[in-house]
Amino acid sequence: MAQPLPSFGAPTMGGYSPHLIYTVQSLASVNSTLVLARPGVISQISLSNHDASHSYIKFYNKATAPVVGTDIPLATMLIPTKDIIIITLPFGLNFSNGIGFGLTKNPEISDTTPIPANGIVGFLTFV
Image (cartoon, rainbow, N blue to C red; front, side, top):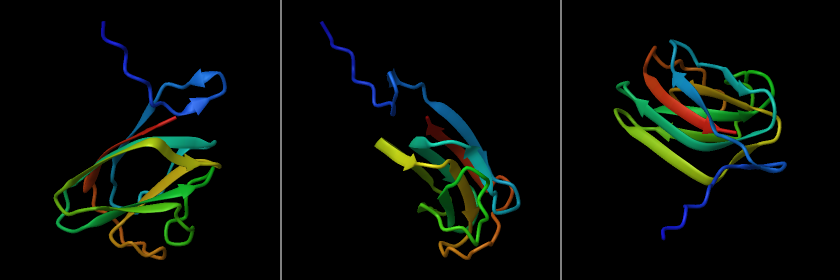
């Protein structure tokens, strides 16, 4: 008899929490976004870049919307031109304060070059 596969959900008090999904659809801006105003864990990132140049997603450990170009990201990830990234994090990307993100054209912390509307689409899975 087949055994069930183990769950890789992020642990919480008393067991595992169901994963939530946040849909990402860029506006014509740096998309300063607060996903979760409390501690959380991102377990999967799935984004596609429909723009003609590279873009970057910057994750912030904040309980308020990040100030893109001023706040220091916890992580910055490249989303290549006309490509898709799918990142599964079995142990999660942990945020002790909250989960925020921004989208920019360049990787520098100070960059505030906006992403076009619908240039980046996808989702984040988190608990």
